[in-house]
Structure formats: structure tokens, C-alpha cells
Image 1: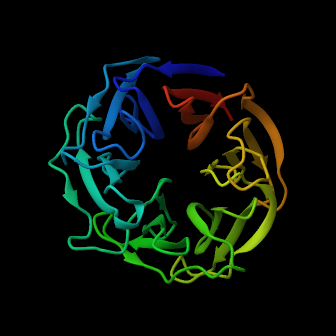
Image 2: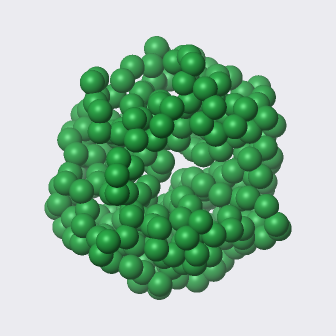
Length: 307
């Protein structure tokens, strides 16, 4: 495994995201004095051949906290960055900016859904996926009142979205889904919960409608997870396997499933020291996994693992 700890220009950092660009890797995160502080902004760094350049601030909305950037790549290679803005999570508004040159320059950020007051639209933490029919599906959730998850489907390559209904649960609060497609139209998600375990929901119509979410055997500490599906169908899930609400954010491990998420085995321990190692982002690229995560809120870790 190749591992790099990125130095950041702020006292605190969190919630990283990663995408492969034409000439390297692009990573983004939020950073500032501390989470929720009004000086928190979105930062990005470009890496080539294992060397990352100086992080630059991408967001331009001043005087209020920024949260949860999500990087994704359009079919034409344009890098798209979604992120949340707002002092309180319930009042989030989603902004989007684009880069046609691998993160060297960015468009002026714009609201994804102008006038939205639902607590944020589009991807909330984890990357959208491109479905076999060409549509783009983004994992979304709301924290206005009870935690509830939904998805956003785009027919114009992530420029605009149409949301699904909220996903039903057994009463558990569910947020921050991570998605994969196993066959044309058959889409699945794992969800962070406040009930000590990950939940799962399934769709047979490309994410337009969803089954009721059910509890899985996977432990969850009420912290973010992410997964990626390799070209052979193998799933790789990065998570903190701690079955306690607001439990420890260590260890951070990589699990593998060869049966579409029915069973899982641990294949790698990314971190197991005391501290916080959390909010992973995972991308499968040909024969490697790209993984980023929060390293004790002071650095962003970047790893490459062979599949």
C-alpha cells in the first residue's frame, strides 16, 4: 500500500473526497479552525506521481461554515465538486463548481438547486455513480428533524437532479448512503445509522424507488463509510467496525464482498491506533483503489491499494 499524509493549511480538516483526473489525482476536504466555524472552507490539492501540490481554497462563500465536499467526474472528464454551505446542518445549501483542467482552475460556485430550503440537495458525502443506462445517481440525506436518506437521479450528467422519496426505516436515523449497481437497474445502498449498524436498501428501477432499509450485520459507529465496486463485481467497503452509536472512530478497515454485499471479510486495516480515522472515500480505478480519510483531524490521508 502507498500512503501519503497531506499537510493542510488550517488547524483542522475533515471529510475528504477523491477522484482520478487525466494526469493525476484530485483530493478535496473542508478545513478551518474547527468543524462548524465560520472560517471553514473547501480546499483541494492536485497530486501527480505521488507528489501533491499546495492546497488551494476552492469555495468563495465567506463568513459561514462549509461542509462535506464530493468530487465526481463527468463523461467528458470535467471534475465536478459539490459541497454544503451553512452554519447549521439543517440549513445546508448545496453549491457546485467545475474544473476542466484537473483542478488547476475552477468555475464560480453556484447553488445546485437555487432557493432550496430542504437541508441540501445532491450528494451529501459520497460520490455519485454512473448507471448502466447512462443516468447519474447521487446518494443524499437530510438532517432536518429525523435523519432520512434519499437519492438524486440526473439525466444530464450531474447538472441537475430529481430526488426520490425518503427511504423508509424501522425507526433508525439514516444518512450518508453509499451506492453501487450490480446489474442494469439493480442499485443498492449501505447507510450510516444511529442504531449501531449499517442499514441496506435496494432498488430495481435505477434508484427511482427504494425498498425499506433493513439492518445488516455490519457494525457502524454513527460515522461515515464509503464503498466502491471493482470491474469484476467485488465490493470494497471502508468503515469503522464499531457497533456503538457515536462510538470510537478507530480502527479504520477495508472490507471485501464477492457476493454483492451479502457477506464481508476484512482484507486490510488502514489504521488501528488510538485517535480519529474516519470519513473514508473510496474509488476503484482499473487495478487499484484510491482511498482518502481524516487523520486525527489534522491531516488527510491518501492511500493506493492494489485490487
